[in-house]
Amino acid sequence: MQIHPISCGLGYAFLIESEGGLVLVDCGSPHQEKKVLAAMDALGRHDLKLIWITHAHYDHYGSAAALHAQTGVPIGVHPADSEALHAGRSDLGIVRGVGHLFPLGLGIAKVFVPLPPVKPEVLLEDGASLMDYGLAAQVFHTPGHTPGHSSLWLEDGTLIIGDLIGQKKRACRQTLLATDWQALEESLARMQALKPCRVYSGHSPRAIPREEFCNL
Ligand SMILES: [Zn+2]
Image (cartoon, rainbow, N blue to C red; front, top):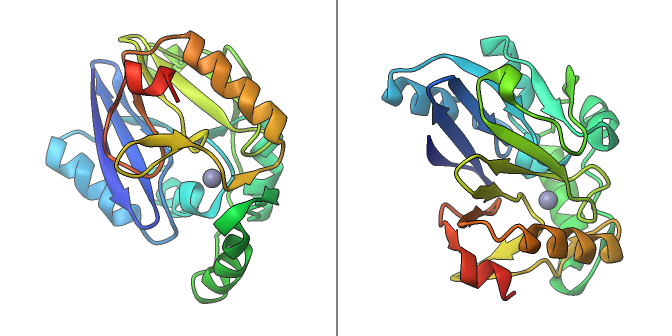
């Protein structure tokens, strides 16, 4: 199993390559679909089975509609964020600190680069397996940043965690955006208890080692 981070505008997509096919986690801002398609071309593989979205934010599902239109591959998300994708919403919740700039920035971004709505066909709850899509991985519902925010636990001990945490040079706690700050803390504690061997967050290609993640 290999993970290929792809820079997609404001966020990162993660193309997971395994014997069973390809699964894409997130797809960045709008108009980033060519980068994902180019990454598949570079691998010489086009057996994409699922586009799974960690949460309903502009910079995580912005290119989902275009990728779905071009590949026919279904979009998966947790039921609690499904309606937001279908409506083309990106709810920011209760902002803190410089997070207060985000609603303004998002409003401007959506005027110039609208967020295309997309209908998720695959609703994945806590504990759902991705074996139907060729990948030995399990979905964990990790609410807080958004109501349906979820993380993906891979067979090799890798965790892909969306925006449950932040990352600059090093990993940091999510301090800017949440719809439920208490739930966010509980979700992080639950993921730390898994003691993953490495963690990918939504805005960096860097794999966070276990010790750094567990001591946030
Ligand atoms: Zn987010």
